[in-house]
Image (cartoon, rainbow, N blue to C red; front, side, top):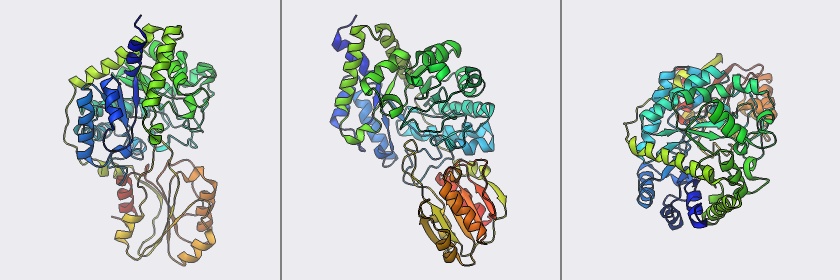
Amino acid sequence: MPDRQELRQLALRTLIPGFSGTTAPRWALDLLDEGLGGYCLFAHNVADPQQLSELNSSLRQANKDVLIAIDEEGGDVTRLHSASGSHYPGNAALGAVDDPELTAAVHQSMGAELAAAGVTVDFAPSVDVNVEDDNPVIGTRSFGRDPQGVARHAVAAVRGLHRAGIIACAKHFPGHGATVVDSHFEVPTVDIPLSELRERELVPFRAVIDSGIELIMSGHIRVPELTGDAPGTMSRAAMHDLLRGELGFDGAIVTDAMEMRGASGAIGMPEAVVRAIAAGCDLICTGGELQKRGPMTEVVNAVADAVATAVIDGRLPYERLADAVRRGDVLREWQRENRGSRAPHALGLAAARRAITVEGTVPALSNPLIVQIDSTANIAVGESQWGVTPLLAKHLPHAQIRNVTPENASVAQISALADNRPVIVVARDTHRRPASKGFVEGLAASGHDVVLVEMGWPAAWRPEGVAAYVASFGAAAVNAEATVEVLLGS
C-alpha cells in the first residue's frame, strides 16, 4: 500500500473545491500543482467571457487535466449570466414546451458558451421529478412531474452538452423532487417504498445511463428503505448497490456540495468525505460556500489527511480510493478527446416564448401598477436578476412600480395606490407563501383587474378572482422578455 503522502495525493485528485475572485489565488494554483482534481466555479468567479477564459487558462497551465466545473442549468440557475439573468430558459420551460430537439439545441448552445470559456464539466441537467409543489430547492429546475417526460428531456439535454464537448452531470441521485426541505440546511427525507422510487425518481437516471452519461451527482437525501438514517451520498446501498449494481452505471459519481448541512452538519466535512468515498462516490465537491470565508487550503488538507488516515486504519479500502481516482481520470480523458466549441445559437428567447401559458385575459395596459413580490433565492439558484419590471417599464413609461416583500405587502396600500388601474403582480413560487397568496387574492377581491405573473413553479394553486394568470416557467432574462411580449399583446 502507498505511504501516507502518496495516499494524500490520491485523495487530492478526488477533490473539487472552490475559490473566491475572478483570478485564481496562489494557493489554488499550488494545490493544482500538487494534483488537486479540479475546481467548481461560481457566479463570483465570472465577470465576462474573456475574463472567464483567462481564468480557466491559468488553471489549465497549473494542471493541464484539471476538471473545471460549473452549475449552468439555464433558467434560474446561471453562473455565466447572474448579473443579467440567463439567456436560456430552464428545465421547467423546456419541459412545458416538450420538444426534446429544442432541449438538446438549447443545451448545445449553452454548452458551446461554456466550452468557449474553457469550462469542461457542467453540473447539469437536474433530472429530478418535481412531484412536490412545495419543493423549496428544485421547482423550475425540473423538467416536470412526469417521469417519462423528465427522462426524454434529460437524455436530450445530455446529448446537447455532449455535442458541445462538455461533460454532462445528471443530478441529484436518487432524486430530490419529492422533498419539502432544502438539503443545504438539513437532510430531506423521501419516505417511499423502493418500488415507487424505481417507478418515479429512478426513471430519468436509468434513461441517461442507457444513453451513455459519464457523470452523476449524488444528493444528500434520506430514503429510509434504501439508505436507512444516512443521506444518499454516504449510503453504499444507494451509490454502489443501486446506482452501480441495479442501474449499471459505470461512470463517475460526484457529490453535491459537502459543506451542506444535509451532508456534514452532524459529523464535519473530513468524516463526511471519508464516508462518501467509502459509499462509492469518486469526486467530492468541497467548499462551494466555505471558500467565501477565505483560502480553502486548510479544509482541503484536513480532508486529504482524513482520507489517508481512513485508508491506513482500514476504514476505507485502498482499492476503493484507487478506483475513485481511476474514474476521475476517465473523465479527464473524455475532456481531452472531446474539447471543442460551436458558436452559440440565438435559441433562448424562441424557446421561452413557446413555454408561456396564459389563463384568463390580460387587460389592456397603458399605465398599470406593477408590484414585484421580492423573494430570497435558495443557495442553489444564488442571487441573480429576475422579474419583468425593468423591461415592462421601458414599454410603459407611465407605469408605476412598487417592490414589496410577502410580509410587508399591504392590500389596502396597494389598492389605494392603484386606484382604477390594472395591477400586475410579479412573483416566484406564490403557492408556497401564504402571505403572497393572501395579498394577490385580496387585491383581486378589492375589485382590481389583477394579473399574476408567476415566474416560479406553476403549482396547482390558482388565485381566485384574478383577470389572468401568466406562467413563465422560470425567471431567466429570456423568460422575462417573453412574458413582457405576452403582457403587451405583441
